Image (cartoon, rainbow, N blue to C red):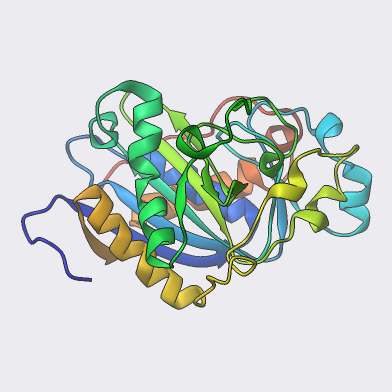
Length: 280
């Protein structure tokens, strides 16, 4: 990756594919351990093994999923820290960003979404796709931001569209001094597999599209390279590859064990789960 040596530094953490509970625990640990003014902001890339269903922070589990079918077919269910609808995570590359509000830019939540999702637009364009935000590309009169039980069935203002079809989805959680944003980049279209686990139909889900369907699937390794270069260009940043810190790893393991691997948080939601261990 070529970039300006004077550009602000960001950490690039590629954890590879993990179980769903571990993925959500790592995202929360990165957010919890982030110290504005001390910590470098983070771009994390990861996958899901095995395929997993995730609930939005405010969804009612029993009303949003056929939990009996999930159990019968051995499909893990987790709950995200962020809002939105159900996502079936399979054959996708997922990213998360942890940064300060200042690094997300001025102008509030919507402007922050535009800035933090800008690397996706850049990346898709480098893949030869005519990508844009829904707020700029949606057909006249189409309503954006309506609540849907299945993430890929609805369009938010800063979802990415190609040819009017939604590519993946993004969600954000803001604390006073830190932001977590994560989102999915579908390599293959597995929407039909995910809809099976809903208690009812998901109108609009059929409009979701994957990179493979768009003829722009370069392979996961090459896609990561393109996204990293696009992130540096769009954010004016320089990525420094690295691993989780000891603090982040310790907290992630505890959150995975005590919070995300089933239990009250997954089924009912509630408060976040921990503090970052003190440096020694």
